[in-house]
Length: 160
Length: 93
Image 1: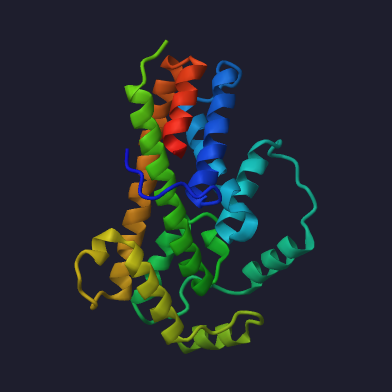
Image 2: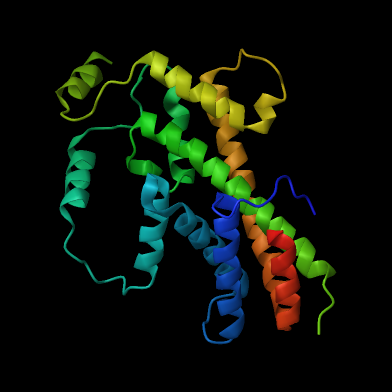
């Protein structure tokens, strides 16, 4: 197993691992309770654990946590928007097209694709988008590393 | 073209980002993408960086999906708590 450094109890990797393992334990307990295919439950648990480990410090984690919370509610329920969300909604609708700030250059046409890949990316300004993308990539890589280690460990553990 | 620019100037609250700021952010992103970092060339266009970034993120998503599937399968077959404990110990030490 690749252990690059001694575990820092407050490192992102450690925080994520704790949460993810707890979530997997819960999933195992209620295995037949939900109707989701099990791989999807694992994936959502992984994404949620990472977003929760980072907390709401980042726009992308806020978007992930929002989406997960919304998933637990009835889709028809429209709760009144909080002021900040309302302001953001207005800015989004009246702010024209934030996607191409350099209309004539070819360069930033690709932000459209990137916005779809980064949670919450659709409504970010270009500078925020790039910063959020960098952080998102770092966290995704950590998530993948831990999941890979888990798969290796589970594969090599004798089952009872 | 000009009409689009004048429309953007009328937007309130949307700050104009300088080209330098964008170039700086793009170069930071560049450092994170293994594809580009390993090529050892400084002359990568912003467009290429964004493209590689998208590819990289898509690959990571695919890996998460694949690993989730494998984990789900493995979880079905692993029931013992002692296995869990051994795993936790290995992961966190």
